[in-house]
Length: 531
Image 1 (tube, rainbow, N blue to C red):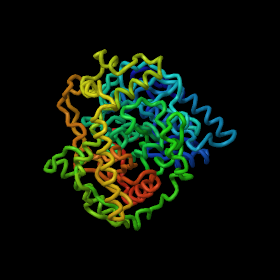
Image 2 (image 1 turned 90 degrees about the vertical axis):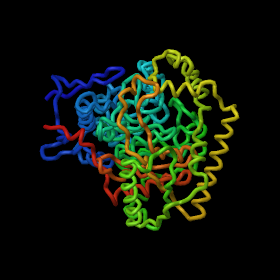
Image 3 (image 1 turned 120 degrees about the vertical axis):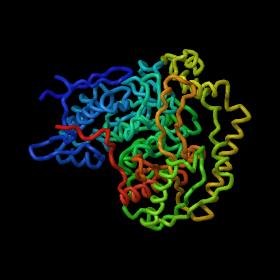
Image 4 (image 1 turned 135 degrees about the vertical axis):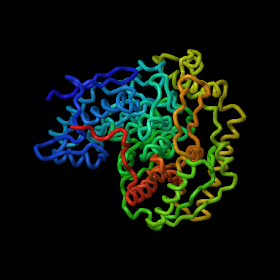
């Protein structure tokens, strides 16, 4: 049978397989009697299959390409892929040759990655979800991309994102849809990455998190999402939003995969000097200590206070709370000592004040564009004056114009963050806590408004019950893991928060909970392909 060949189309995705679409099972034949199951595969499982010659890199990439072709722009039309790597199969063949000669090319040998299209790639456009940049190809890879490639990973696709890193709609691609219910939002702004990983369009994903854009999409897709400590991962080569909050992290189907990806992307980068604070604080591997009894003896505090607007009497709030309460009981069953609740004085008000930050965006965006003279636009004002940004997103962006970090209001933000950070640390110290937990969202993802592409104020309840703000407000790492599903069949995320540079502890807790509950299951909208 002739091998499928991808065709790249800027601004969207068309995957045509030679001779027409060939529906192949997501069970890849690698020998006469041996098969490899691509659905829900993990990095260790793929590595083992490569080592035992049960799988080739080409077969793995072809499997994901076939699923993208079947479900991204047809079927449920999840709309997760902005640009497909036109050289993915060529790169796979090269990695197969390396493996035959000398073994794996690195710790992520042939790991197909869905990369949020906020991150620069030298061989594919970087659009930021906007039609204004859909043909712009940066001259260099972002630091994180170079690190991934150096370890043998393949950037399989640039994933769709909320335009200029907010929500789930963009002028370059339209609406991203939730893989578990395509009528609902996928959270944002890394919604394309998460929906794609959930649907098994790639092995792992990379998202960006300013106010929750890794953890929110991961939570509503029954995935693992890590927001690392701010100075841990380089942002060089990523368009900023609020530099005091911006970071990048893995979105995966398992905790072990998230740890293995962080091993590669973490560490000092002179192009992002803030990462110098991480020197000497990285373990040999974040995958160390991942055991099923990792919760035993751990002291965890439950934050019940809201971080954003919610309706405690709403049916979907009750459904989410039921799932979260079961998660608390499971933590105790698995050996944790739980303090429920932990009270932090003025918590909700301090979180809100800490995140009321329109002061950094214009300065940061203009500085980024000034460093890229080949970009199609030079300033944030130039971008908005085109009138081509999604109206909903443009409405929010207007609010950051003519603001700067010299404004007195910015000092109030920094003051609130300092107070909140101290209050959280004191609560953890007073009660001897190792970590805090809360639901990533206290409501189910809302139904997509009919006017999200046309109205500056659409009828949409995006991010209702958002509890992602604590981590970016104080710069502490947070990990969301699948907590189960509501009675309506929608995923709920359980979020762990720890002190700075304690990602290893977060992985330990998340892994023990993951293995002790096994809540992850793929969406029914994107089943294995028929033979």
